[in-house]
Length: 318
Image (cartoon, rainbow, N blue to C red):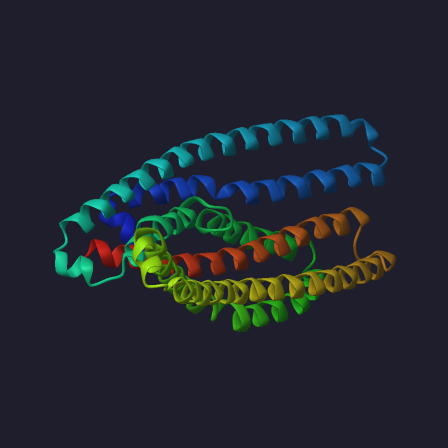
């Protein structure tokens, strides 16, 4: 899945730099999760112990850590954005040079819509996979954030982590069967429909006089309508499956929240946990769910975009 992207980056000679930028970006969400959980726990612990004089130092320390963290993140993302912009320009040049170097028989052996889709849609999908929201960078960040959040919640309360897992695993199972396995095929179907729609529209512009002469406008428009409907249906299938995954996530998320709330209330009444520990677990639980939901979305987007990356790689290797 991600191997196609890294093989393409290796061909361009920028794989090591890209991996380094990913690693520099990845700790942000994990550090922010720890900082927020620590800050809330410290504040409620001060209220429980009536040590209000420590609140100002805790808030000042949290504000300083937050400013440093966002300054670091902004610096890394500015470098990352410039890197991907240069990569997109280089990839466009590589694709144009490769297409121009191919024999005429091979170029004319494909529809013009396929070449246009490759030069525009496929390259844009590859850059989106490298730099876009909810793709490879956010996927790596979400993975590290989820692992750290699970460890923090295990340390805070294994029981509450178990309750969270009871509602989390069904969501992962349904998403895997309904979304992950189907989206790559739907993405390829959408890509083929886009290429065919481009091919069907081109004669209406390039051969308008001939179409009017032979009174073939209705036939050509009907062909365009069929290809547009095919493209629309492929995109609707992708959106429907993504929407179903989001609906299940919301439903199980609210149910899990209520279950953890009741379990935390019971443990607090029995003296097994302090209120500050319950708040800490709630904060970390939110990071766990956010990280896993982000990871699921990123994996789905990466699987869809990897189809286009493979097409680019195949063209460059011809």
